[in-house]
Length: 341
Image 1 (cartoon, rainbow, N blue to C red):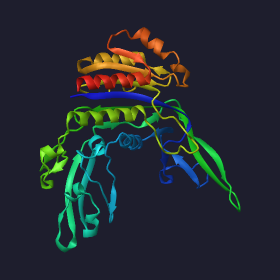
Image 2: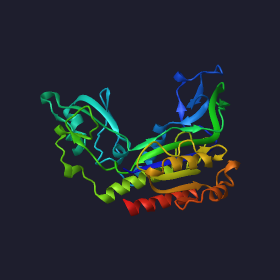
Image 3: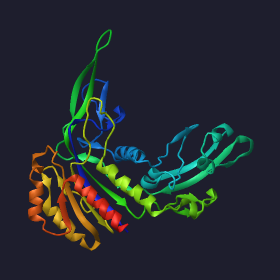
Image 4: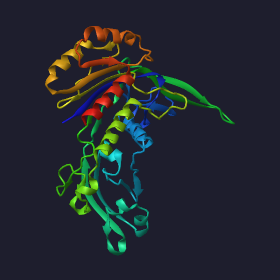
């Protein structure tokens, strides 16, 4: 088994990357017209779902097919064809559906989607399917580790009559997250008749192994696109007045064959915790199957990271630890992946 362990950090000077609902927020201003951000224990965060949504946009930009959900009657319909759609392959799905559609709705589906339905006489077509695929790209939220301060900005909307006052939450800080990518799992699919287990296709779908088998190049393109989706992470939300560069400014990459994310808790606001990193590397050495790449961007504002590369080079003398820029870390890992896949 091959799992790419990744720890990374983005830097927000003044942003609001992931909104929240007023229904789950405490209104401290008395103004009901307030736009909130996601937070936990006072710390701003960007959910894993938000990150994956934006990585999915990158997959599409790379020319990979990405599925779209459709609302049919009161249910959400997703194709769940992971051999065809890269996002379903990489991020997984859960489908428990018993749905009947009309002949007209059936004709609007493409051929692969039509194969998921059977005739239901005069009522149209029906589908009764339960299947689930585990995500091959596990992610944590990005959490602000530098402070617990959420600013409430006072805003005024000019109108032809009275002006309208409203509030907007925003924040700044150093936000870190971790992710694991199952290198062997991407592009591998299972056909089963057991509803209780993970399966990509049911026996009733009449899918054979040849139809869903991806070649090496197709698998590799999906994996590399997923990795680059993190490297060039561009979170789309709330950028109109809060334009923020959301690409990682610090990253640690390495492949392991077992266990939790090796680099969890290593990236701190005051710099990379070298002792914690060394301890974790030693504890997990039996499972390491690649070099470890550490990248720090020269664009980072955090003063604690200005001399980090020199400190790391001074204290981490192991040949398998490669230290450089964020771009170098990702590029060198991708070259390693191409050579060993």
